[in-house]
Image (cartoon, rainbow, N blue to C red; front, side, top):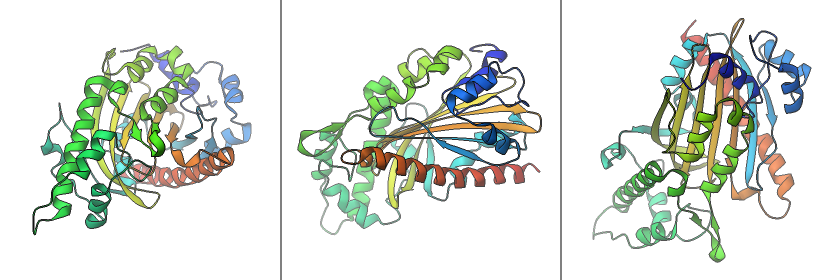
Length: 344
């Protein structure tokens, strides 16, 4: 194990990752009210959560591209049962915007992408890749743009079929680079006028904002920054790709899941280290903490997007965070209902 049960319990109440509060029903969480006050959770918020409501809050961004939202809610299941639901990819299967997905095993191979398609509009998506250029329409580096621009379609051949194979290769390369080098293996996205956007830097700043995680679970904090080095004992991880509808547009996402279990609590980190468009990257941290009548779930999502920079950036971030909070709240209400219905 990484640290003691007492520390892990305090992690869920202390992590800046969670909006986290220590409610009266949660045992052994130190400095509960002080933590809640510092993070802005009011007495009314806490009462709402204990009454069964899902409370959402927008959090301070770590840079001008970031939207940050936290959710806190109760689930009428034990941590063990809720963990079992999480292990079955409950969030992914509940989200109506998930078109398709699959795990990536071991060092990865093209076989892991055998079910990938350019759905829901193969011809449109193929054309976008063939005409790729620096900008925000597709998140690609220089080499990737060159590859797609030089894809050859044989006479009478299917552009969608050829591009699908090229996308599978590109995603595999991105996965393998990250798996071998961590954040250092994430190449920047090319933007107009010679500019770039670094998803690696955004993930680094999102992680560094978890100052209390560094204090309570330093092993977990270090692996987030130094992956694939410094893997602590007791850590589980997995990878997946997904075809997902984000802001009305289909995108491909590569995700790295970390999880750590203690006898009394469970923590999950979901890192989207590559997103093909719509936004740049995302990282969420979730803690399941035992409570008197089930489990309190603490969730923090930090998403990076170039769409909230420039003129009026502060206002756009505020609006964007509220929209994201609303969408996530709706999704997690469905997740909670599905989890409780499946274990009723």
